[in-house]
Length: 409
Image (cartoon, helix red, strand yellow):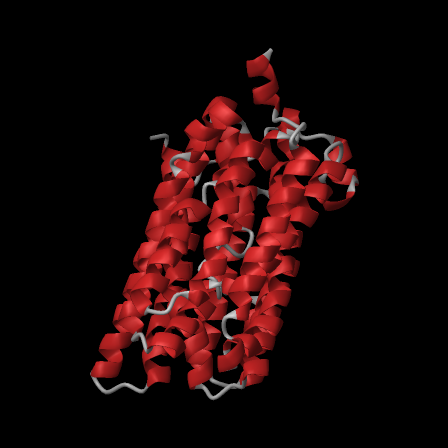
């Protein structure tokens, strides 16, 4: 494998391991600090809103100020947030750290990393290899998140068994998240200048226009609106809320919760490998929509399962087909813009997703913490995601990626 590709895959693995660690324990940690449902929801919302604001500036300037510099800056924000969460239980400090720093309550990507790494990878690989490469990149991330979730749940469980309070046990896990930020910063300094935009592909127009976009601004904004809807729906069922629901509904311990999230992410990552072959045969948009729809029907069914094995099985089957749209979505966004718009396009669509998901915890947290309503977030998420799939297909079924048009020609 190309050295820079290997380094970017490794940074993805380290980062997603850290996110996986955090996803199992974050909401459990906040509730162990005796925060109310409203305080938890507000903190998670501010976490995502703050991340969106910081990431928007970083990603829309990355192609001009340097992709590697932006990646190192993101690692520093990840470290700072982790250290603040470990250092004090004071709510105002947690709010500030969550708003300014990089914290992932969902186990999914946050910060400037994903957009800039996608643009960097697309800079050094051929267009025909992009979707398959991004599928493997997705697999690395999903597997690393899965291992991180398993490790986070296991560490917390062992600490509790050794006599630590729940809050201290969860705090041990968050220390690991902070160390992941240090490792990332070191790795990003080893990436070469090949990932930067060549001078002959940088246009003055991109510098003058807003959000780092020029000719693709309209289509990127349309995609962003749809991606925000999908992310808003997904925010109702982030990993931290799923673990909370399984704990409250079935009394599942932290180690078993970690194993469940491990299995979900592992299946999701493996499913992404099918995205490349399916996209070559059916096209990027069709692959995105027709693999995503059935997974959302399964999401609707999770809270209606009467036993733990059935609920876990439906959730795992859902994850086994839910992520094929991720590398195709990423590849499609990169494909339809100019080289000097890639970081900005991936960043703007990513920020739209962050903004969409930021609002959901304010609604979802009180629902999950009310026993009689704990099933409703799954139904809301599944229904909205189905609406997103139908709207996306209607709007973009005729708008093919350039390599798909050339292949047909």
